[in-house]
Length: 147
Image (cartoon, rainbow, N blue to C red):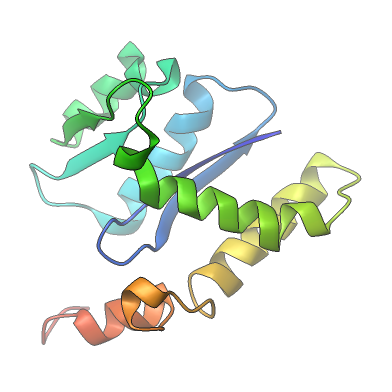
């Protein structure tokens, strides 16, 4: 099983994710569609990823163009440019995946949903956010009148 996740670079919140049995464009489009539906980003937002073929596919690039996003990809072999995502996946593996023995795809999906939505985004403290979880950081950082 393969996860794809999209993070808000400012708050570290996982705003879109998808789990699939194969690494392909459907995997990453599932995460992108969820993120776009959750955030409705302003035109010109920057979408940063590694250079995986699933992020460079015609369908993925077209979806970003429809949403009026700008594409930025990490240099080949430079994991530091994608450090926030690498850190997220390390946390996901250490604090969820390696501790469980999923018996089915559905069980893995349910457990990942719980971890991402109910633990990582709302309870897990991040030193880079002043030891607050992403949801709390966003709430405190929200401009007055933001819904």
